[in-house]
Length: 190
Image 1: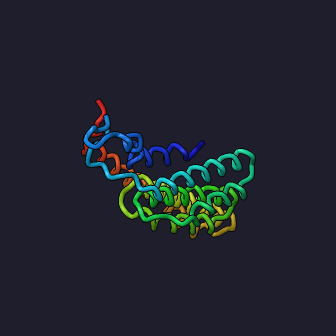
Image 2 (image 1 turned 45 degrees about the vertical axis):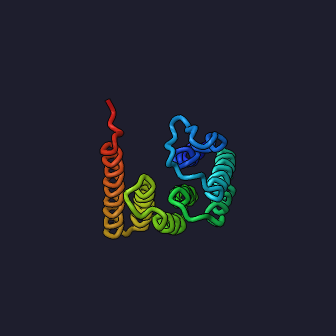
Image 3 (image 1 turned 120 degrees about the vertical axis):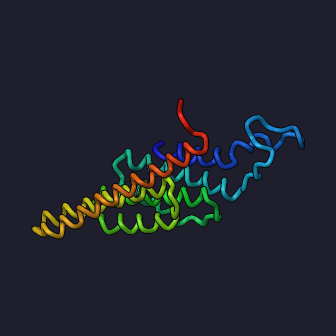
């Protein structure tokens, strides 16, 4: 399961851990869960569950060499009615990045670029998801540069390749911001 871990982490980190404590008597508390934790939002949890299932279906189809089937499963995910929530945006951004990678693997450079652009709409700030989408976009541009070079358009290929490198550098900057933010919040390693 390539992406199921991410969905599970989002669910547990953003309220899923409180699920086990819902049946506790008022004031009894729950180990590891702040008493001020917001209640779990059933539509968000349902969306995350559906997303996990569709990613798993895409994993199976991809393992069988059925890239169109894997793409179709992820297209269902991004077309699913979704509640408005940060974790939903993260899942949608991640799904768009994976769709872009699959389309790129099939040689659909324009389709991959569209997926990245749509994914970036769900990842505005400096997050892992934005950084990953920028990385994928850099790979899309790298593929575009190679095609231009193969077609004898060396000068244009060089410009696109330079853009690819700048996108990859931007992806690193975003991920560095994510790391710095996490470390500032007490996530420092010993």
